[in-house]
Length: 90
Image 1 (cartoon, rainbow, N blue to C red):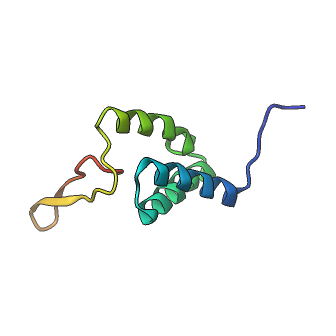
Image 2: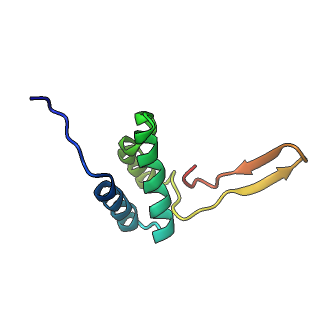
């Protein structure tokens, strides 16, 4: 028997949302982050999925990740925008 563990997607989503709400994310941000992390895994991009949570938590603890932040336009040159992510999820 293999060591594979399967977790129902909805339960995983609720768990990941709870992690981010507990860390300080607003409910909408927690939902968006959970949705995107899980979708990355489901699309086969595990390097950008729920395995990123420990790295994000370390960044939060070190002050590099800012929860509930929003990107802002720094420069609008018509066809090219320069954005500043303000340290928030990207």
